[in-house]
Amino acid sequence: MSKERLYLFDTTLRDGAQMNGVDFTLHDKLTIARMLDELGIDYIEGGYPGANPTDSELFGQDRKLRATFTAFGMTRRPGRSTSNDSGLATLLDAKADAICFVAKSWDYHVRVALETTNEENLASIRDSVQAARQKGREPLVDCEHFFDGYKANREYALACAKTAYDAGARWVVLCDTNGGTLPHEVEAIVRDVTQHVPGDHIGIHAHNDTEQAVANSLAAVRAGARQIQGTLNGLGERCGNANLVSIIPTLKLKGEFAEKFDIAISDDKLKSLAHAARTLDEMLNRAPNRHAPYVGESAFATKAGIHASAIAKDPATYEHVQPDLVGNERKVLVSDQAGRSNVLSELERIGIKVEKNDNRINRLLDEVKEREAAGYAYEAAGASFELMARRILGGVPDYFAVERFSVNVERRYNAVGQLTTVAEATVKVKVDGEILISAAEGNGPINALDVALRKDLGKYQKFIEGLQLTDYRVRILNGGTEAVTRVLIESQDESGARWTTVGVSPNIIDASFQALMDSVVYKLVKSGAPA
Ligand SMILES: [Zn+2]
Image 1: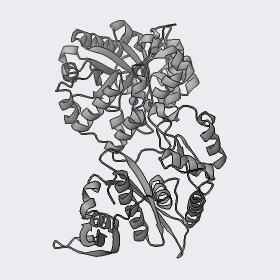
Image 2: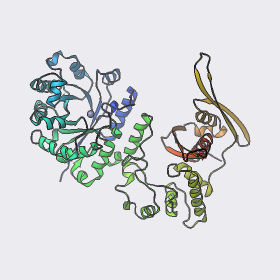
Image 3: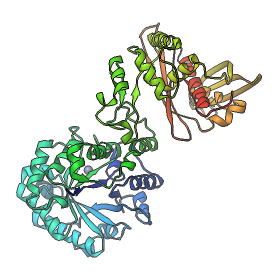
Image 4: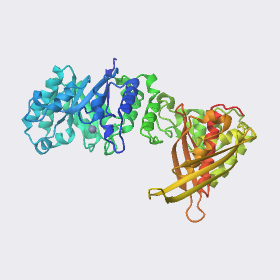
């Protein structure tokens, strides 16, 4: 049986850019567009030409993408002709393969927001679609508030969809703009729409306000829709859009969808999904969601000892799909619940060869338990665990020693009378018998210490040049004057690899220093720096 083609439409650069705290530059947009293109997404919506300088510039140039590059904008304004609407003219002139028009499909919005008649709104949809076709662009129509509109006035919502289709729209996209519709409603409504517009011309655009944007998208496909709109990592206004990073592997790996549909993303490209998801977070300068389905760091992580020994026997026992299919990896967490089997499988994963009955494994296990009791968290700090394991099993050189460090924080008025806080750190290290002293300023004590520590490590300096701290988390473990601080530091290097290290101390600076040291040493081990 030949499979039906299902199309993926990404709106990370348009709807995703609506999210709080997201602000893409032109360079960001081009980088993301290339990444989406590389992945095999069919349509990439770049933005709203004419709405802001970035989007106008983006649509002013040629981009050489395989995907259908799509401009977003409004249908012609009521009461105007297509030739006398400057917004529409800008949209039609944009260098794009397709135009996605947003149109009202709820009569209440037509009356209140658009202040026009139902008939004029239909005429505006028809005229805009025809104008795009005449200009040689593939037309799509986003029917805004379609599901709410359908519930309020079914006939009119269907008339909007049908008008768009009859005028020649390649896709009539049903939007759950408020994100409040539930999967069973989506399925029933889309099924009804397919009686008026063929399913292979229907798209779904779901928002995540009840955390069902992915479920709603899949429900629409079950009912006959053949285009799914969404964003990478579910970026989008309020609670976000449908997350393509969850939808793609579901379509590829889950029987009901995989047997029926083809998408343009190859098995090979699927393996780059986790990387794409993390790259986007890096660009947004935020830590990736560890618990993201399929691609999160914890998506295939197991903690309890009994699960770990079962996983070692057969991974399928506790995994719904194989992690490597989406470019992720299995992880067995080392924690206070750790049994030998956790530690053994973790050692195997990180490539440390050791006999099963080696006595040193007990020593490592005791050390883990003792340190976890003191507040260390190795399940979150794989790199610190790896260093400890390598030390006990005999493989970490003493690259350098920190003889002493000091940090000074001063709050004072500067030359122009503003109150400022300045931190300075000095670090004295010994490398190969040679003493090196570095000092640095920072916006805070940890930053100053980090800069000073990494300023001059003599012959090791070249190995840590690409090292960057990407996340810093502090947790106070027990209250009161006896409080202990746990610091987790996430680092990244030039290859994009990330790792987390941990430090614990009653003193936050000391805890941070331990985590920093582990990160630097881990990087030296990873780079194969000579002893
Ligand atoms: Zn939207």
